[in-house]
Length: 182
Image (cartoon, rainbow, N blue to C red):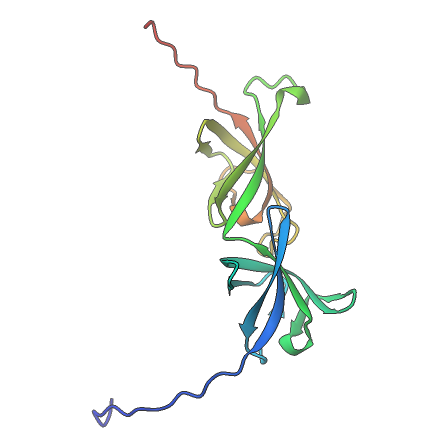
């Protein structure tokens, strides 16, 4: 900028190492590898993008294996044998929906499974619509590996949890019974 000239400079190639990664999604797992800087240090709960032949996805580190049956919560890449991860870009959320006239019977509740983007926000007190399902969120149970929450359950109006961090949602059915004379 100062001399008003452009100069070509060769950028040195950054050195990378191949790291084994296990990715879990919806109860299934597959192995892949990623190229990563050997100077990197990783910690459980961190997220990164995996760009492999199998998929391009956002994952969260759930375990760091440094030896046979040896795990740690943080380590430099040079010490890590395998990174255990969970896909968090698209997730499955389990929901327990109770009827509006809940008489206390568990038999009247039902479970549904939602497939949503990991960054979808569930808010206590808000109504959610997914296809034929409409329910008001009453409580949200958080996954134990979710790093940014101070509580395991949220049940106050306005409490928000991202779908990727939800272990289970609890809601009340919002059945609208519209009838017509026709």
